[in-house]
Length: 105
Picture 1 (tube, one colour):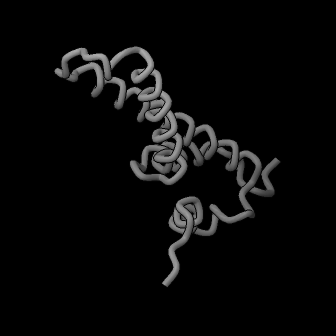
Picture 2 (tube, rainbow, N blue to C red):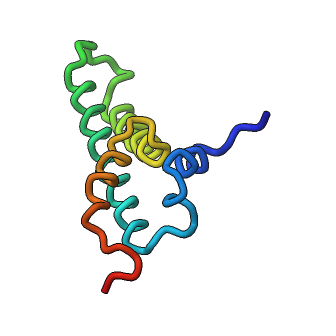
């Protein structure tokens, strides 16, 4: 059995509205919801790191912290795109009710 890429698995789990037949507005809403989830995950990771009780050592300097930030940002983007936490899916579902239905003017 082959596994699907994370984006395909998420699209399949969201049902028929998530296929390539998405309206432009719905696609933009999904992108915005994923962006918001990514920001939320970044903030969660930053808060967790701020609460660290690790001592400062030569291996915890500014360079390492910069790479940790970059890694956290990348992780947050992947988590949001894959729907790992479900924030984007929930936001999208809540806001989709305000989108015009096809055929409405």
